[in-house]
Image (spheres, rainbow, N blue to C red):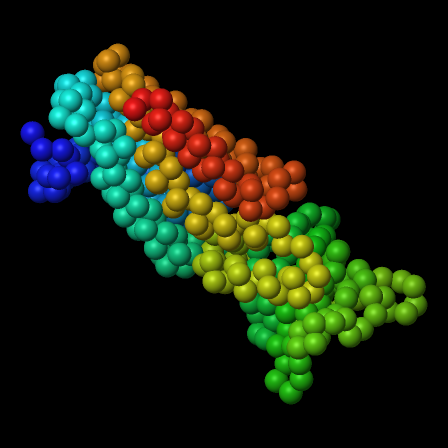
Length: 371
């Protein structure tokens, strides 16, 4: 029999055969994880809101449908894991992997179609996350905020952007105080002016009822010169203040979090923060997650392939168990890294990519040992 690299038509046939093998478990994994995400959102939040505020079923279903692109973005790496793990497990159990190896095809060559398919899935994942999910998430947030507004309990959420008139707002953290007022921390307001330079105002704290905004020691920056143009205090030694005619209903229905923004929009906001000397670690991490989550499709294929070959002799049950265990460790590593990044324990770039780096190294070691 000719060497595998000399039999291009046979190798293309083998690539198609291996690729088709992962399709069914991939679709099962995708469907299962999306259903889990729907159930989590529905039973942990939406049903409680529906019963407490007597919300009709229609807006609840609308929120679920609008959240579907985000669910798919998160589900595609796990679906890839299930596809590769269960597909290769089946081939190995039936002796087909061993037959290919005896014919001179090394494991690293069998991995090529797996990586190619996972690359296509990663590209689709990125396009959904970049083009479809942000506007859908923003619309879902708008529907949810309208529910709160109808309940006379307007919600101001943390780590969000929104746009009113010629001003862009960012709020880091929020605390609810008495009399329907809010205490806000780590604020930024970017104001465009028709006849003058744009102004960036940053402040550590503010209090608002949604219409009147009182800022503690605001600082102003000329965005053209990149320098501070006013003092950081009013001159009296007391905290300064600024009144902005922003209606609470506008405020709550126009908020945008990182999930509602594309990578280009996040990059723009990060540059605005940097120009004002404000750290934007949470946005930097969100920006890199736009790329690291789709890249996870390739990483899980690299890890699950050698493990599926190694433990195939224990039967199909082991393939399912292996997929669940890998899913558990991969996503818990992801959530732990993200938590440490949000708390400032890890730099934002490391927090966004560390889980992929760890599992990529593990996959390469496992592949080398299995060869």
